Image 1 (cartoon, rainbow, N blue to C red):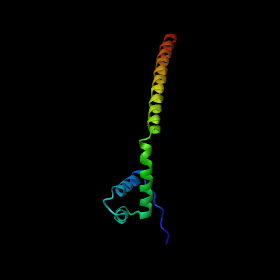
Image 2 (image 1 turned 180 degrees about the horizontal axis):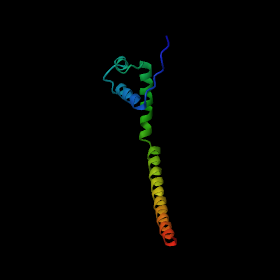
Image 3 (image 1 turned 60 degrees about the horizontal axis):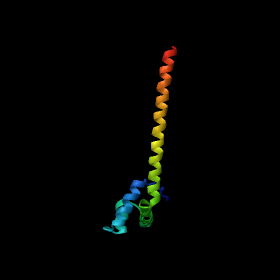
Image 4 (image 1 turned 120 degrees about the horizontal axis):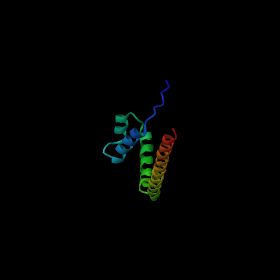
Length: 96
């Protein structure tokens, strides 16, 4: 009898990993509660703990700064295009 591979979304994995990190329940209890194998829970816990350092790294801050700069640049472009569109509308109204 073969079992179907279950796919879990990231929120589910995070919830299970957080439960394991808290340590209030044993891996067996968490496995029983969430219907996931204890080995899988250990892997998700390990990935969660490894990923925490990236949250506080400067590259994350640099990415946020770059995103803000890109957003500012895009807003400027939108403003320029809006002015250009308004000018063209006025110009075409005069020609008609």
